[in-house]
Length: 247
Image (cartoon, rainbow, N blue to C red; front, side, top):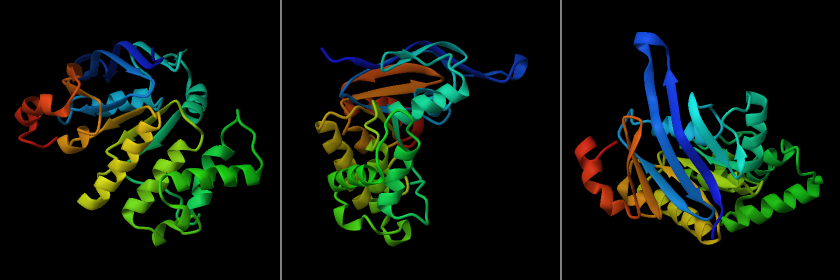
């Protein structure tokens, strides 16, 4: 039986107070097992970004609990959350967030420099970065600056960077949002291949076609989970009904 990597119970998040309070999450229970690929969908204002921020330890819930890889992180302070983020979570964002003056391989080495639990020599870090870049098909682009790479190649560097510290989960927030169709397909093939190798992935997307790469689709509306199903095609009516085909 696979271990549970993510477990939230009664998760709530409220912004503001009194009459201006906004309940972004209203009692969300999420369970993700090791090795799963889960997509999170929902219309604008559904709470999916808030949920991802909490799952990524970028924010704390107002109420409820969050267990990440066996650790209760819901009450940790900012400093401890930062440590958990660096050790346990690999982020892939819509914007690649690469440092423009560093080559691909040096961008890859940055998370290892800030990981306080693993000590590597410079050569060991470089070897690790080169190995992961090869996994995503960029062995021949290691010494290129971001401006010398296509959008799809930059996103592959970002995915590789997310993997370099061997995180418990990869959180991908609209990872193909800035890419053309061809590059989007390439990135999803990379994520699918990583999942086949055992990676645990949670991805926010507004595109049903991309959600089809996932094993499960969690659909949010008004801060609540209204659907948690095995296939993207099973939530097509919810998606189209809320957004006319768009989120």
